[in-house]
Image (cartoon, rainbow, N blue to C red; front, side):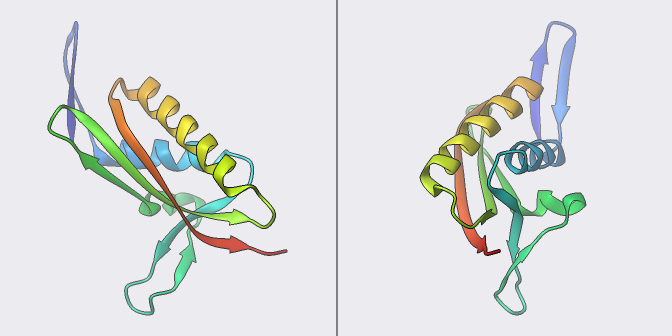
Length: 117
């Protein structure tokens, strides 16, 4: 949880806010099929449904009141992965920072799967 000071007092922002904002920002980028998670039982990567896409995001709270974001995605076949990841990083950084006021230290994107067809 992050605490942000405003002119009216303090606001505490829960992890779920960051994961949901990140998932929405990432999946709105062209070429992203969805968020993914690796199963503990079988080790396979599974595409998440829209309502549980926050599970593909991991938030790390840093000492200086910043956060680091790690997200796992599946992409469509034929997309330029480096360009797509750059776009996702910028979109996530902008959307999360503007909605919460929290400084984003870094965004790491992991492409776990490519959907063909």
